[in-house]
Amino acid sequence: MDSLRQDLPGAVHTALRKWHTGQQDDLPWTEMLTIAVHLAGSPVPNLDLAVKELLIEALNALEKQAGGDGAQILRLRFLDGHTATGTANRLNLSTDVVYKSQRAAIADLAQIIWQAEVEARSTRKAHIVGRLDIKDPPRLFGVNDKLAELSTVLTSKDGPWMLAVVGIGGIGKTS
Image (cartoon, rainbow, N blue to C red; front, side, top):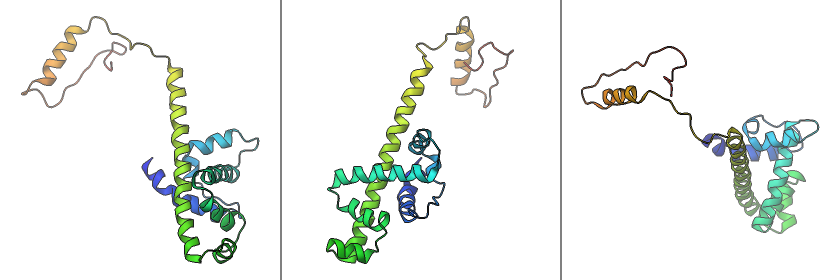
């Protein structure tokens, strides 16, 4: 999951550059739960559209968070197809400022997408754990003597280097 987080800014930049070509790379998008949610909610599952929807949502969130400067630069540069010079002229900035703001905005956009991914995974985990309905772990009866014996062997300083627990199937060896 850490490599997914580290690869995300590069993947966001690549996805923005490929906005008009419609040929998104599969990784890391296919590994993300947020994309799976977008694909599941779509009448015709399409990775390119799911990535674009996610990017638009993140751009909208970035616009609300940071006052919109970075989001505006990303929209002009990638969604509208303006060059860095054209974007700089339109916003009355230097090209260097546009590139610097673009890098910062892509990092912020990746962070927003990562937060959405973490929230989606947390929600999914809570849903799965809630469905398990495990109140109390199962108890094994009549094994207290054997457990005490096993504990003594395992905790002794001169104990064996390897220990095998054997028996017929279903008697609780794993437990």
